[in-house]
Each structure stands twice: as C-alpha cells, then as structure tokens.
Image (cartoon, rainbow, N blue to C red; front, side):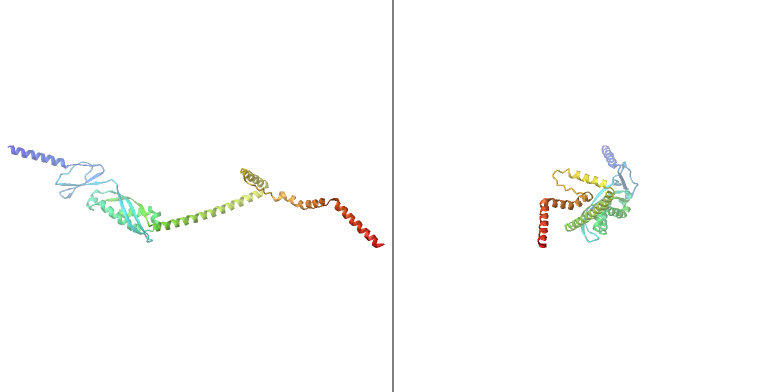
Amino acid sequence: MTAWLIVLILLVVLVAVWLLASVKILQEYERGVSFRLGRLRPVLEPGLQMIFPGIDKIVRVDLRIVTLTIPPQDVITKDNVPARVNAVVLFQVTDPVRSVMAVENHAVATSQMSQTTLRSVVGRADLDTLLAHRADLNEDLARSINAQTEPWGVQVKVVEIKDVEIPQAMQRAMAREAEAERERRAKIINAHGELQASEELGQAAEILSRNPASLQLRYLQTLLELGADHNSTVVFPLPMDIIGPFLNKVPQWLDQQGASRQGPGADQNATDQNATGQKTDVKTHD
C-alpha cells in the first residue's frame, strides 16, 4: 500500500509539473503559430496559452518592425564605376502563419533578397543617379523586395541607401567637375549682374537728363559721400554748360593781358618810328 501511494504521489507531481510547463504567456506584440501532433492550429493570441509539451509546438512571431542592415555590397554602376553601397531595410511580419509555413527563416531570407536586389537595382543606375536621386532608387528597391517577400507574409516598409563609397580618383574628378561648374555659374551670374546694372544705369541717366535739378542734387549727394573720408583726394567735375561761357572769354582776356604788358612805351616807340619814317621821306623829297 505504501508503494502504491508513493507512485500516485509521483504521478500527481509529474502531472503538475507537466501542466505548469504547458503554461505559456504571449506578449502583446507576439503571435503564436502552434502545431499539435504536427498539425497546424489557429494562431494563438496574446495572453495565457496552454501548450502541452510533447504534444504541441509553438513558434513565436514578432509583429514589430525589424531593422535589417545590409552589409556593403560591391557593385558596378551603369556607367562602369565601381562602388560599395550599403543600406538599411525596415520590414514587418503581416501574416504569422505564412512567415512560418512559406519560408524557413523569414529574417535571413529577407536579408539575402535585399542584398541581391540592392546589387541589381544599383547596377542599372549610373553614378549621378545613385548620388543625386536616392529617393527614386529607394522606392524601386522597396517595390522589388516587396514583390519577393509578400508571399512570405513579410512587408518591407522602408529601404534607405546609407553610404556610397567610390574610388579616390573618381572623387577627385568629381571635385574638379563641381569646381568648374561653380565657376561657370559664377561667371554667368556676374554677366547677368553687369547687364542688369548697365540697364538700370541707362534708365537712371535717362531720367536724370530730363531734369537738370535732379542731376545737380545727385552731384551734391556724391560730394557729400566723398566728403565723409577726410584722407581722400576729391576731383570736382564741372558741367560744360557752367564753365562754357568762361572758356569762351579766355582768348579775349589773354589778348587784353598781352596789350597791357606792352604798356605806353610800346606806343611811344611806334610813334618815334613813324616820325623817323616821315623825316626820311622829307629828305628824300628835297
């Protein structure tokens, strides 16, 4: 009787341990794909669930967005430029059953598919597109990867190209090209500026020429601006309409000054010369 009691107690303890081991708790972001004797059961929801060891098997599926980093890939662009490109992929499981039944490991499969698609998409684009139009490439990558992972119950949310490494020689060539482009733009902007300035100056000159008073005011304003610097040498330009009458009187004034320098002595000499000439004429006549 004692032996039977001991066996019964052992059985009760084993059953209690087995029942305790059957208790599973699923988090809110998890779903359970369970199999009973190899047969698929309905998806287990979050909370307390009974999974009997030896009879049932459960696979926990995380429904949160997973960040997957694609290692650097050696690619050759459409214009035959070697580059190393890496990216980041954000994906989420939308169908727990298919993510378990359709593929062995959906995370590894998504990673491998992302690497292959990255090399394929970048190889179809040239270097300028890869550097300047990453948004278009990211959308193309997301569509291409989604087309492969959708049967697995995995949806790719975002694909972003992180870094693009190109050879040093290509970087120097691109730097020279960028510098030449900036110089070209600077020259064009300078030429447009000079053209606009010349047009504005022409219009300003035309407006000032209509009213001499405006020209005089602009002249006085210029003198005021020049007078702000005490160490500057200022040359005062004078309009021809002001100094023209004075210039016309300069020759007459010079003639008067020459006549005044000769004085009365010059007149006396002229008179003596005339008298001498008359005497000579008289003697000759006699």
